Length: 210
Image 1 (cartoon, rainbow, N blue to C red):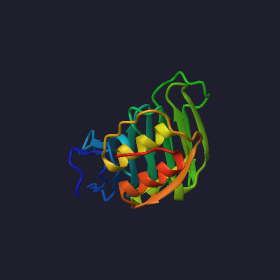
Image 2: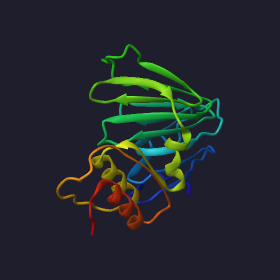
Image 3: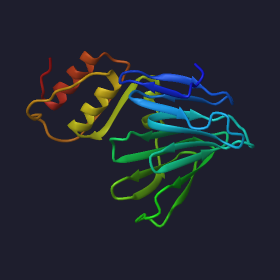
């Protein structure tokens, strides 16, 4: 569908959206995207809360910008993923192709960089509370699996598992007590039912569910 002034997807839903300039984005669950200036002659700017994957059309006359919390990501002919849920303390920008520039809105950073450039295969992470950023290579098979309906868990705790399930399946989860098995969770689920996922995780973490 074409992007209206505001597009929002509730938990458990994903949506492919096309922009007038030929760009395409896939909006993850519990996410919202909005056009700030639909007819701006010099740039295309959107606001993102949540996660989305962008495939930006080449338009040298109009830079494509995504504003997500304290960061503005600018691209020309680029594909990239941004995770910026308001309730999370971490923002991630992962570049699949070409090059992007990331600007910081806050001047007081513990890191000396206010602008960072990413090349293909690089990822930037920004911790809101500490105001610290890092840049590293990333595995696209891990970061972008959500677009294909998969849930990827790597070294995450029980709280993070519950958060991913709530967003991915659009459900409410009430946890009682603690898991009998401590430690990190590592698993990948590809288009599996919620019951199948919970059964597998329950065996690993030692919990029952209903």
